[in-house]
Length: 286
Length: 235
Picture (cartoon, each protein chain N blue to C red):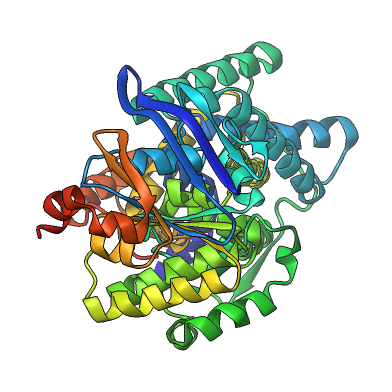
């Protein structure tokens, strides 16, 4: 029983980690708290939903479209909107992101109505057992493996490529990056694109596992925010540690106290982390 | 003429910092720019590197007006700055920092020979190439910043406050490196608070004070100048 809860928590934690990777990247590099992050996750989810509903495209195939579309959207939003206030205080970019969130949510509501929808794939109910005690839905395991693959791709881009080095350089010392010739505006746009692209991937996986609706974004932003804070900024491992921590405590918490307390548990952890380790579990490391 | 700055006026918003600056660096020269803290040296460097737009005036590099170019293009033209306080990327290793130095170069796909060249000048950096730069000593950090600048293949390297906070022996070593780089054909703009050091090791000098060029001339003559002796050298 405990093992089953633990496994559920880890699988959920993987998805939380993927949700938070993009938010953490954008926050760490540009000092923007992207309040619209959950809305981008919602757009990723609906990309997959419509490709499935209209074209019958398998969600694991539409994952690629979701990432590409959201990358392009993120790139554009940064380049032609946020870029104009990037030098202003964090408060201004926060307000702008808030505005973007309201816009996306309402545009989605008007276009698609507030109906709750589900991507009903034929293999959705498949599962397998480990021993006699643990039953695991196959689709969650596949989603978890994808989370790992996408995270490794992120690690690779950031640590082993010229693009990744320019992103890290920009976040570590803005003026020094400009003095070696980094095109900061472009780097910011690509970083925002990568972060929003990761949100798109998270949205696709979310749509396979749970029902979706145009107003799902707010709660996902909060969850991502909690994960980023728990894990700590400035490290790619932060969101992964934070995601697993949140997933596991939530799984045990809802089991003991009931699922109505899910959010209460998340935010209790948030407050505890802020009191005990304000920089997050991995804060300050890199 | 490699670098030709004409009638440059610069400031932050309404507060003017530099007034009618004229400054030239000839091909193959080491030029010293000296002056006290707050004289406007850093502002001038920011303007040359494109981080700050001047009110008016022009900056000509190799006959081309670079006054309002973005910094990435100025770097690509071959004006590279080694900033005050080193400004290394603290989360990166020595080698990654050096690779960032070559970021703007078209042939940056193959920077192995460049790395080897720079490691030959600074063997200490080769020993420490996998270390994060935060764990280096001050002198090693300055070497790393200098080496990162060289990785950009500069025609003109601008070195800002190289000697700050370093032991005299280490400064001597670094000055030898500067002279060696200059012998190999790179022009140098040496920006220093240490007037003696800068004028001892340059061909030509400019003295900046309260945002204006107060004096200029051959470095040796400036060293003998009574006013400079009294104000800057305390003799």
